[in-house]
Image (cartoon, rainbow over all chains, first blue to last red; front, side, top):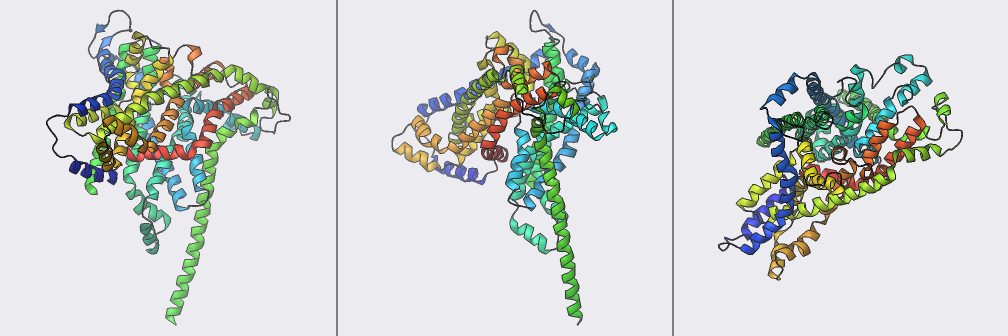
Length: 316
Length: 293
């Protein structure tokens, strides 16, 4: 994980310091055990045990109370036969696709221009862009409804004021074709800040000499971005792509709080289905199956991340 | 002669190019400012509406308020009941910090300084936890916390929250402790400090930067959480701020827009204040986490 050179140096040092020690230092072992205990206890109780339980529960028909019936993979089969689930599955993949295609170029553009045109207000603008990322999702949802609500929402009342009937007649949250995009706009508002800050930090690390020599060679900004900056930060771009994709798989707060997954199933997501199956219909087995599916999908994307990492390591 | 004209053409070209660069710069800066406005306007716009009555709003939402009225705030404050929620949220934040940071610091220290086959395997076990989405374990987590009777208590919320923060911060602490010079620990040991003394008196104070980041970011994580709170807290008395906001969203529509706007102002105020005073640290912390992790 760590790429810091410092880590490597101290590693070498530590190896030198550690001569082959006497048989066994029980004092040290007790110390290590005691220090690892809290973290491992937390993880075992609240993470590893529930993970095992999720896999097990997903094979049973159970409401959490009374006897559970083993039904094998039927929960999964029923999910894929369910229209709501299929819509949610497609929504989540579409969401992942569009967040990579729209949010990443936007974030890169903002980060790149902020770094290239470094002015006095660069730091201020960076703080402004990041502000939305700090807002808790419940507040983002509140602001989303504030903007997109019919009749009294900001856009609708602005349309009335300007007498733009075409704009006023759009039902941003109630129209199944548009609700997805209203939510996506809110998510772009909320999640782009992190990518901007992350890209900025990486673009700033490109050595000044490279930029200067590019300028001397007569490269304009577009060429500099296209042939130097983007290739040099390709690894961070991939990381952000993975973070957005995995984030899309887990999407819950915004659609749940703004549209509740509706109208009909237009904005439903895997996590919303999990919540509804588990805590509205009390179908624990099926909810656990959704959890397993979310996990497997994010595993696939995470493994993709590591294979990317290895490839970029080879190029270096 | 020819030399002269060539260089003149070159200079002219350069001048045009320079003018073009300037124009591009201005366009880009304007776009940047517009985008910054797009970020900040949704947070500022509620202020336009909060001082109006419902009637005034429906006739002229965009005019300046004729008079400063506070009753929308009063109504919204009563409806959103954020006071109690703020207190609960602060408890959850403290609990999450107390659960995450010491455990992660200690584990990170062991993984950095006591490398052996066993600790390496355990480190991978912790690393795996970093990739586990909390969504996956919601059902068993709810069942388990009900069984041991901590569902619907604040510890029942912040303990699982801490568990899901520990992997990340253990990784960060590990790389931080690895970066510290090993001679220091060795010197302390020669001076007679035991394992525990070395950690608490020498190494932990040196890790203060990491600790500050951990405290700050765990705080923000707990502060913003919605999903875990939604599932693990049912008693309205224990509702966190985010649950209160969500409850307001479900109970009160946007029909009474001035009141809704007042609620939005109230809801976003604590986070906004936090950000205004701490944004340097928050951004630095996020980056430190992202670049190392």
